[in-house]
Amino acid sequence: MFVLLSMWVISGNCYYNPLVNSFLNPEKLEDANPTALSGIAFALLSPQVVQITGQIVDANGFAASNGNLTILTRTNPIEGLSNSFNLNTAGRFFIQLSTGETRIRVEQSSVELFSFTLNINGPGNVSITNKSLAGPDILNIEFYPTGTTPSYFDIISTDPPNQDSFQTWPSTIQITFSEDLEIPSDLQSYLEANVFTEPSITFAGSSIVNGNILEIGNSTGFEIGTNTYSIGRGIRSISGIGSSPRTISYTCDSPCNAP
Image (cartoon, rainbow, N blue to C red; front, side, top):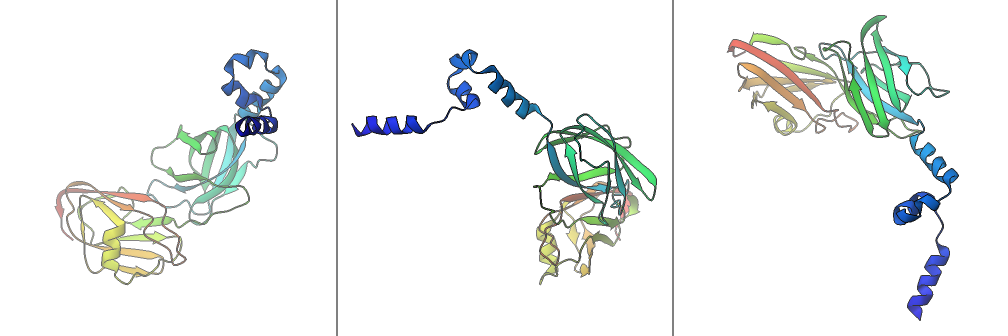
Protein backbone atom coordinates (compact mmCIF):
# COMPACT_ATOMS: atom_id res chain seq x y z
CA MET A 1 0.00 0.00 0.00
CA PHE A 2 2.83 2.39 0.93
CA VAL A 3 4.69 1.60 -2.30
CA LEU A 4 1.63 2.29 -4.43
CA LEU A 5 0.97 5.57 -2.63
CA SER A 6 4.59 6.67 -3.07
CA MET A 7 4.47 5.95 -6.78
CA TRP A 8 1.28 7.96 -7.11
CA VAL A 9 2.87 10.95 -5.30
CA ILE A 10 6.01 10.85 -7.45
CA SER A 11 4.09 10.58 -10.70
CA GLY A 12 1.71 13.28 -9.57
CA ASN A 13 4.59 15.74 -9.09
CA CYS A 14 6.40 15.03 -12.34
CA TYR A 15 6.28 17.66 -15.08
CA TYR A 16 6.40 17.08 -18.79
CA ASN A 17 9.71 18.07 -20.43
CA PRO A 18 9.52 17.29 -24.16
CA LEU A 19 13.30 16.96 -24.50
CA VAL A 20 13.68 14.56 -21.57
CA ASN A 21 10.50 12.69 -22.53
CA SER A 22 11.83 12.14 -26.04
CA PHE A 23 14.78 10.23 -24.60
CA LEU A 24 12.73 8.31 -22.04
CA ASN A 25 9.93 7.50 -24.51
CA PRO A 26 11.43 7.57 -28.02
CA GLU A 27 8.44 5.72 -29.44
CA LYS A 28 6.26 8.73 -28.54
CA LEU A 29 8.54 11.27 -30.27
CA GLU A 30 6.28 11.34 -33.32
CA ASP A 31 3.35 12.34 -31.07
CA ALA A 32 5.21 15.19 -29.35
CA ASN A 33 4.30 18.81 -29.95
CA PRO A 34 6.30 19.88 -33.05
CA THR A 35 6.37 23.50 -31.91
CA ALA A 36 7.87 22.57 -28.53
CA LEU A 37 10.52 20.36 -30.11
CA SER A 38 11.50 22.97 -32.69
CA GLY A 39 11.80 25.54 -29.90
CA ILE A 40 14.18 23.27 -28.00
CA ALA A 41 16.26 22.66 -31.11
CA PHE A 42 16.40 26.39 -31.81
CA ALA A 43 17.61 27.10 -28.26
CA LEU A 44 20.33 24.47 -28.54
CA LEU A 45 21.53 25.62 -31.97
CA SER A 46 21.21 29.40 -31.57
CA PRO A 47 24.46 31.41 -31.32
CA GLN A 48 25.62 32.08 -27.77
CA VAL A 49 27.84 34.76 -26.25
CA VAL A 50 30.92 33.45 -24.44
CA GLN A 51 33.72 35.15 -22.51
CA ILE A 52 37.20 34.03 -23.40
CA THR A 53 40.76 34.97 -22.46
CA GLY A 54 44.23 34.14 -23.75
CA GLN A 55 47.70 35.59 -24.23
CA ILE A 56 49.16 36.85 -27.50
CA VAL A 57 52.92 36.51 -28.05
CA ASP A 58 55.11 37.53 -30.97
CA ALA A 59 57.57 35.36 -32.89
CA ASN A 60 60.15 35.71 -30.09
CA GLY A 61 57.68 34.57 -27.46
CA PHE A 62 57.40 38.12 -26.05
CA ALA A 63 53.99 39.31 -24.89
CA ALA A 64 52.22 41.62 -27.36
CA SER A 65 52.00 44.27 -24.63
CA ASN A 66 49.25 46.87 -25.07
CA GLY A 67 48.38 45.57 -28.52
CA ASN A 68 44.96 45.49 -30.15
CA LEU A 69 42.56 42.89 -31.51
CA THR A 70 40.18 43.72 -34.36
CA ILE A 71 37.29 41.48 -35.36
CA LEU A 72 37.41 41.03 -39.14
CA THR A 73 34.47 38.64 -39.67
CA ARG A 74 31.94 36.63 -37.66
CA THR A 75 29.74 33.78 -38.82
CA ASN A 76 27.19 34.67 -36.11
CA PRO A 77 26.97 38.43 -35.48
CA ILE A 78 25.16 39.29 -32.25
CA GLU A 79 24.08 42.82 -31.40
CA GLY A 80 26.13 44.49 -28.70
CA LEU A 81 29.43 42.68 -29.26
CA SER A 82 32.46 44.94 -29.71
CA ASN A 83 34.66 44.77 -32.79
CA SER A 84 37.93 45.83 -31.13
CA PHE A 85 39.71 44.99 -27.88
CA ASN A 86 42.88 46.05 -26.09
CA LEU A 87 45.57 43.71 -24.81
CA ASN A 88 47.02 44.39 -21.36
CA THR A 89 50.74 44.72 -20.57
CA ALA A 90 51.04 40.91 -20.54
CA GLY A 91 49.46 40.66 -24.01
CA ARG A 92 46.33 39.12 -22.51
CA PHE A 93 42.81 39.70 -23.84
CA PHE A 94 39.43 39.40 -22.12
CA ILE A 95 36.72 39.41 -24.76
CA GLN A 96 33.13 38.48 -25.52
CA LEU A 97 32.55 36.52 -28.71
CA SER A 98 29.70 34.64 -30.34
CA THR A 99 29.88 30.92 -31.00
CA GLY A 100 30.91 30.00 -34.52
CA GLU A 101 33.95 31.28 -36.42
CA THR A 102 35.54 34.65 -35.66
CA ARG A 103 38.44 36.02 -37.70
CA ILE A 104 40.75 38.28 -35.65
CA ARG A 105 43.65 40.58 -36.55
CA VAL A 106 46.39 41.35 -33.99
CA GLU A 107 48.25 44.67 -34.06
CA GLN A 108 50.97 46.16 -31.86
CA SER A 109 52.08 49.78 -32.20
CA SER A 110 49.84 50.03 -35.30
CA VAL A 111 51.74 47.19 -37.00
CA GLU A 112 49.93 43.97 -37.87
CA LEU A 113 51.48 40.93 -36.17
CA PHE A 114 49.23 38.24 -37.63
CA SER A 115 45.62 37.11 -37.92
CA PHE A 116 43.84 33.92 -36.91
CA THR A 117 40.43 32.29 -36.63
CA LEU A 118 38.79 31.14 -33.40
CA ASN A 119 36.30 28.31 -33.87
CA ILE A 120 33.97 28.22 -30.86
CA ASN A 121 31.49 25.35 -30.89
CA GLY A 122 30.15 26.21 -27.43
CA PRO A 123 31.33 27.10 -23.93
CA GLY A 124 34.56 25.22 -23.26
CA ASN A 125 35.08 24.13 -26.87
CA VAL A 126 37.47 26.25 -28.96
CA SER A 127 40.16 25.72 -31.58
CA ILE A 128 42.57 27.99 -33.47
CA THR A 129 42.91 27.76 -37.25
CA ASN A 130 44.22 29.69 -40.26
CA LYS A 131 47.08 31.56 -38.61
CA SER A 132 48.56 33.94 -41.16
CA LEU A 133 52.09 33.49 -39.73
CA ALA A 134 53.75 30.57 -37.97
CA GLY A 135 55.79 32.53 -35.40
CA PRO A 136 53.30 34.52 -33.25
CA ASP A 137 50.89 32.54 -31.14
CA ILE A 138 47.82 32.50 -28.87
CA LEU A 139 48.50 30.79 -25.54
CA ASN A 140 46.42 29.39 -22.70
CA ILE A 141 42.94 30.12 -24.06
CA GLU A 142 40.28 29.71 -21.37
CA PHE A 143 36.58 30.49 -20.91
CA TYR A 144 35.50 32.44 -17.85
CA PRO A 145 32.11 33.23 -16.26
CA THR A 146 30.08 36.34 -16.99
CA GLY A 147 30.54 39.11 -14.45
CA THR A 148 34.10 38.13 -13.54
CA THR A 149 37.60 39.06 -14.70
CA PRO A 150 40.07 36.43 -13.50
CA SER A 151 43.69 37.27 -12.63
CA TYR A 152 46.65 35.67 -14.40
CA PHE A 153 50.39 35.43 -13.83
CA ASP A 154 51.92 35.41 -17.31
CA ILE A 155 55.42 35.25 -18.75
CA ILE A 156 56.15 38.50 -20.60
CA SER A 157 59.58 37.74 -22.05
CA THR A 158 62.65 35.54 -21.81
CA ASP A 159 66.35 36.18 -22.33
CA PRO A 160 67.47 34.50 -24.55
CA PRO A 161 64.24 34.68 -26.57
CA ASN A 162 62.14 31.56 -27.07
CA GLN A 163 63.40 29.32 -29.92
CA ASP A 164 66.81 31.01 -29.95
CA SER A 165 69.87 29.00 -31.01
CA PHE A 166 73.53 29.22 -29.99
CA GLN A 167 76.76 27.22 -29.84
CA THR A 168 77.61 28.18 -26.26
CA TRP A 169 74.93 27.53 -23.66
CA PRO A 170 73.96 30.70 -21.73
CA SER A 171 75.01 30.89 -18.09
CA THR A 172 71.53 32.09 -17.11
CA ILE A 173 67.97 32.08 -18.44
CA GLN A 174 66.02 35.20 -17.43
CA ILE A 175 62.22 34.96 -17.35
CA THR A 176 60.20 38.14 -16.84
CA PHE A 177 56.68 37.79 -15.42
CA SER A 178 53.66 40.10 -15.29
CA GLU A 179 53.93 40.45 -11.49
CA ASP A 180 56.59 40.11 -8.80
CA LEU A 181 57.39 36.52 -7.86
CA GLU A 182 57.11 34.94 -4.45
CA ILE A 183 60.48 34.37 -2.80
CA PRO A 184 60.81 30.76 -1.63
CA SER A 185 62.95 29.85 1.35
CA ASP A 186 64.93 27.34 -0.75
CA LEU A 187 65.09 28.57 -4.35
CA GLN A 188 67.12 25.62 -5.59
CA SER A 189 64.56 23.05 -4.42
CA TYR A 190 61.74 25.32 -5.63
CA LEU A 191 63.15 25.38 -9.17
CA GLU A 192 63.84 21.66 -9.23
CA ALA A 193 60.20 21.00 -8.24
CA ASN A 194 58.57 23.51 -10.59
CA VAL A 195 60.76 24.00 -13.68
CA PHE A 196 60.91 20.87 -15.83
CA THR A 197 63.64 20.47 -18.43
CA GLU A 198 64.19 18.11 -21.34
CA PRO A 199 66.86 16.80 -21.30
CA SER A 200 67.41 17.06 -17.55
CA ILE A 201 69.43 20.24 -16.93
CA THR A 202 71.08 20.84 -13.56
CA PHE A 203 70.46 24.31 -12.16
CA ALA A 204 73.40 26.15 -10.63
CA GLY A 205 73.14 27.56 -7.13
CA SER A 206 73.41 31.08 -8.53
CA SER A 207 69.69 31.32 -9.44
CA ILE A 208 67.92 34.39 -8.03
CA VAL A 209 64.52 36.10 -7.86
CA ASN A 210 64.59 39.85 -8.46
CA GLY A 211 61.12 41.41 -8.41
CA ASN A 212 59.29 40.06 -11.46
CA ILE A 213 62.41 38.41 -12.93
CA LEU A 214 63.40 34.80 -12.34
CA GLU A 215 67.04 34.19 -13.24
CA ILE A 216 67.89 30.50 -13.59
CA GLY A 217 71.56 29.58 -13.41
CA ASN A 218 72.54 26.66 -15.65
CA SER A 219 75.20 24.12 -14.88
CA THR A 220 75.17 20.85 -16.83
CA GLY A 221 72.87 18.55 -18.78
CA PHE A 222 72.14 20.58 -21.92
CA GLU A 223 72.73 18.74 -25.19
CA ILE A 224 73.19 19.37 -28.89
CA GLY A 225 69.74 19.90 -30.38
CA THR A 226 66.52 21.05 -28.72
CA ASN A 227 66.42 21.78 -24.98
CA THR A 228 63.21 22.87 -23.24
CA TYR A 229 62.17 24.52 -19.99
CA SER A 230 58.54 23.98 -18.94
CA ILE A 231 57.17 26.43 -16.39
CA GLY A 232 54.15 25.20 -14.43
CA ARG A 233 51.66 26.67 -12.00
CA GLY A 234 53.97 25.88 -9.10
CA ILE A 235 55.87 29.08 -9.92
CA ARG A 236 53.74 31.65 -8.14
CA SER A 237 53.38 35.41 -7.91
CA ILE A 238 53.77 37.33 -4.68
CA SER A 239 49.95 37.44 -4.53
CA GLY A 240 49.73 33.64 -4.83
CA ILE A 241 48.69 33.24 -8.48
CA GLY A 242 50.21 30.24 -10.28
CA SER A 243 52.06 30.89 -13.53
CA SER A 244 50.25 30.26 -16.79
CA PRO A 245 51.88 27.11 -18.24
CA ARG A 246 54.60 27.79 -20.79
CA THR A 247 57.34 25.85 -22.56
CA ILE A 248 60.50 27.68 -23.66
CA SER A 249 62.64 26.02 -26.30
CA TYR A 250 66.32 26.54 -27.23
CA THR A 251 68.60 24.87 -29.76
CA CYS A 252 72.21 24.24 -28.87
CA ASP A 253 74.28 23.78 -32.02
CA SER A 254 77.50 21.82 -32.18
CA PRO A 255 79.86 21.95 -30.33
CA CYS A 256 77.35 23.15 -27.64
CA ASN A 257 79.94 24.57 -25.28
CA ALA A 258 79.34 24.98 -21.56
CA PRO A 259 78.81 28.55 -20.27
